[in-house]
Length: 109
Image (cartoon, rainbow, N blue to C red):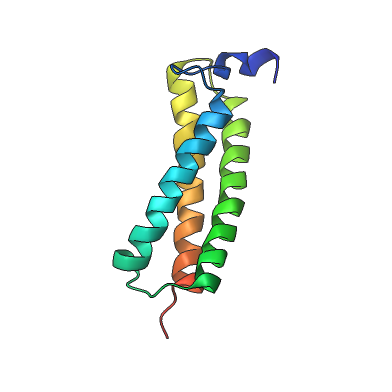
């Protein structure tokens, strides 16, 4: 993405910002699945449940990237602008993840 988003081109480790976000999101959501299944929702596992969580994470990952990219167009080109965009995007994805996991994936009878 040329222009305004060129500031986001590289992070400290030389990664493109969206690649860095993808790596962190995958690692974070994998950990969250294991912890949520065991402690938060105290549910059993299974292939169907894992596939549902994987699909949910894929959807919310796309939402998170989209919200982040949208917010980046409105915030100043700075560390805080990038941080604000990330917090808003991650907050949106987290709320969606929790609601869907609680009501659909790990629901109790």
